[in-house]
Amino acid sequence: MEVEDKYLTIEEFAESSYTEKRSRFLSFAIPVHSLDEIKIQLSIYQKKYYDARHICYAYMLGQERKIFRANDNGEPSSTAGRPILGQINSNQLTDILIIVVRYFGGIKLGTSGLIVAYRTAAAAAISSAIIIEKTVDKEITFMFEYPFMNDVMHIIKEENPIIVSQSYDSDCKMTLRARLSIITHLCKRLEKVNSLRFDK
Image (tube, rainbow, N blue to C red):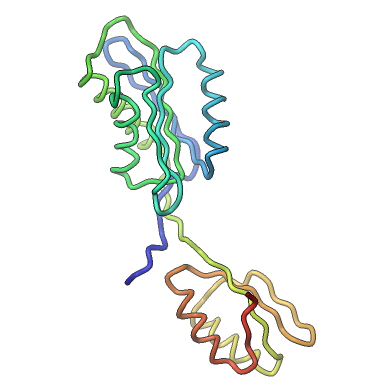
């Protein structure tokens, strides 16, 4: 079974705006990495746009995309948060928070109109963002005797992990970082080197 070790996210903050029947929608795409970070961002936008009718949002966290939430903030159920989350899903993004601020223009949009408006606003913020692919990496640390340095370096040259740190005392110690999909293979090769032992 192939290990899924890459995911899509946005590189940096992006924003856009959209108007529908005099209602103005300001949309913001924000890179986030934790629920605490999301709370801070929501607090910032709620204070900044305190005069807006609705501040709706959706977020997705983690490379497995299992932590998510959609919030309608007073709009009819599933007309705001869910369409925003839908755009995050259709672009297969994670580690992202999208906030859509609505200033009511006096004309009601109706349920279907709201869904389209929030979906369009979220899509516009994503379109303004730079989408990047990131890999899921893992670090391993091991020790070995100096005479086997060439064996270790030969494997490193072929497998091409990142050398995070290395020290040479009576024993050599090294920490490598590699993509999740190659880490098992890398460990199996290193295990065959005489004297090598992994730091648990």
